[in-house]
Length: 436
Image (tube, rainbow, N blue to C red):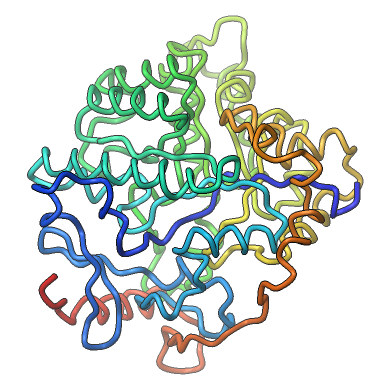
């Protein structure tokens, strides 16, 4: 297959929320309590909500900047590429990258809506969470039909409310919601607890995929303060293995055989050994651990219920049949530091070398469109959805790198350490935010 003939659907990108997102989705009596963007004296833009300041972390929005400027220091909107937060510019950047459709995780709310869940006023949290979802589905995704996979944020603090929101969103055409990789770290019962059953049941009823993004409970995990930050970056995708094992050995996948979980930004190269080990553990230990998968093996259940995705994973593609070809999806990770924008098609094709065309189609778009109920071709002719056709619409998009004045998080020329990252974040939060 030629690069220009591919159709690309990314199941993991991110949105930096624009300042006016709540303007059209709240009743008048709630607008004064909505999160608001304010600018600090240092020039940094932060969200302020119920006394908390929530900055846009640098590495979450560095696309289009020189890599030597990367860091975690909070940023202003002027430092970001407009496609991070402007829906029209996002489409132009998607076209320039040859990407047909995208699923975008939240930023300032936390991937799983942790901001809403920790509010003491749960009615305020419910109203803001629902308003955010309406903005995401109706404005961010709805402005360009067929170009986005809507992703809702359920109210984590109440499984019955979560179920209601899943059903409400499904009526709006949204069949994906985010969840956390470890609810106990956020103060909620584990995913093994029947506490979550109303949520699981609603997702099964509506065909809604539960998307679990890496870092959706604990954020960045440092092995030590003097370890290079490369360690954190290196191991973060693979860290989803703990959640994957928790799911696989839980009651959930067996009680709800139709449920689907997506391991977002988790990669696939580790999956073959993970499944081999799962089957070995089951065979050798089930007599005393009382696990019972019936006529299936753990690897069968994983491939039935778990969706995987990758950015750049030649090892995983090489072993795609051991992963489960029908479960694999692709991601671009725009605008995070790991993104392959604007050369994602070329980078992806290197991993796909030697893969038959029908299998390329499954990996690049068919699996994603089936699993997430995306029907782009009813809005856009299929031939106009290919990499070459989309890029032809974006010949005027500037793909050059632009300096935005980022500050490397170190004091010397040595390796950036976890302590450097922590220090930079602490400095950013030390400056008080002005009144919203």
